[in-house]
Image (cartoon, rainbow, N blue to C red; front, side, top):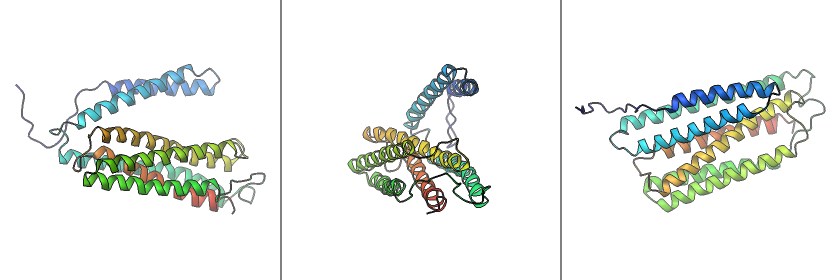
Length: 261
């Protein structure tokens, strides 16, 4: 006999995805080790395939689950927002490590100068400055989409998210062009290492955020977001604003101050 739920919280149903994801993580880690020892990429690709399959299946289940109003109560939505805020906090600390490495190397350079001799840094007021303007503009378009969603203007929501996705793709394309034409490689010292680690992981976050927003665009088109039920979109918007803020720190410290301009 079914019991009536007497609390406002959501207890998740049994799911295969944690187990499948753990297997994918184990296979991926093993593949990375084999790849580093020049033993091929087959295991690594297999692990990444399992991980991507897990992500798709798990997120699909979460989206279907969110459509049940009796499960996603206001208390559950608060918990989801708190979880996303804590996740972004952990991401902040992730980038703190890269900034720590950069400032440790640049403030106390082993050769007495920074950037090191032989390194020709990128002009911060060339492509990096243009990318900064792109991300700042994308922050306004995603905010426009959020306000349109609160007012129930579906067309403006789709336009705002669509413009943000387009700007994210432009940013990624410019950064890829920048990497191809850079005069230094990842293994050429502490400056290239810290530069590519910090900006590269930020670029990966831009790609993830773009995929996140793409899913939100399709969900908005299907009418799955309402003015009072759009936690998934809020999470994507918060993540995108986090990406914007991190880039501002990267531009000012690594591209501008750290390059000696």
